[in-house]
Length: 48
Image 1: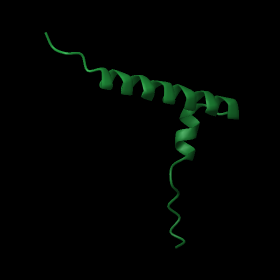
Image 2: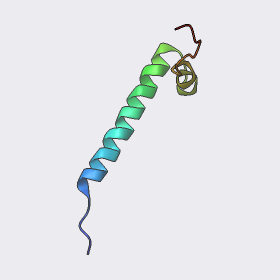
Image 3: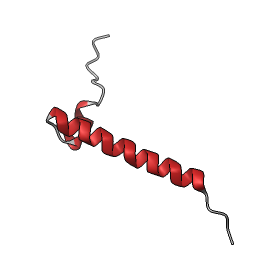
């Protein structure tokens, strides 16, 4: 029988927890997670 990969499971759990925490933080700020992803996109004005 194959050995369970506990590190993978732990990492997935941590990522899920981090994602949930970020969504809660964004909700607290008054914006949904889909709005936040569009605002975080880098602007490409070309004024360099």
